[in-house]
Image 1 (cartoon, rainbow, N blue to C red):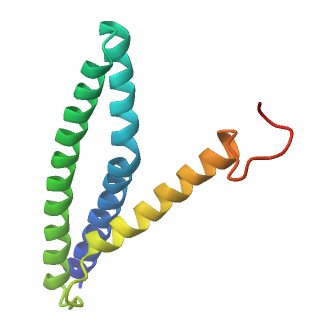
Image 2 (image 1 turned 180 degrees about the vertical axis):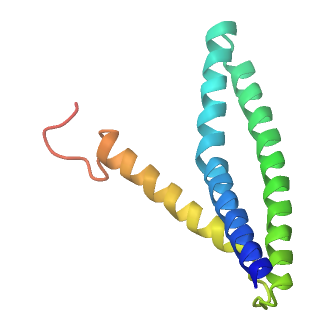
Amino acid sequence: MNDLMKQGAGALMVVVIMFFGSLVLWVGVPFFWLWVGGQVQGATNSVGMALGAAAVGAFATIALLVAILGRLNRKAVEMREARGIKMKPGSTPLEIVMAVSATIAVAGFCAWFFLLGGSSPIPLMGQGG
């Protein structure tokens, strides 16, 4: 029974790590590489070089994170199978984690854009030009 408890805690930890990794994928990677692109543009005064650096860096980082998340997903599935838990076909922990984290990322962006960023979905009279 103690081994089953350890596997359950381990599986939960793997899913939690996948969740934070997917948030980094949705939020952290774009912000980081936009910042890096800004630094490159400031140092070189070349928008093309800044865009290139940001695009290549973001692509490489996303590829690395996807590989890590895939490996964690396989580990979570193995741990569930070791406990005798059957999963629905086509439903893995990573799919659920990615859907939830993408929803949180979009909601966070919308909250920032409309509430903190000073933007309005509908142009209001008397504002602007």
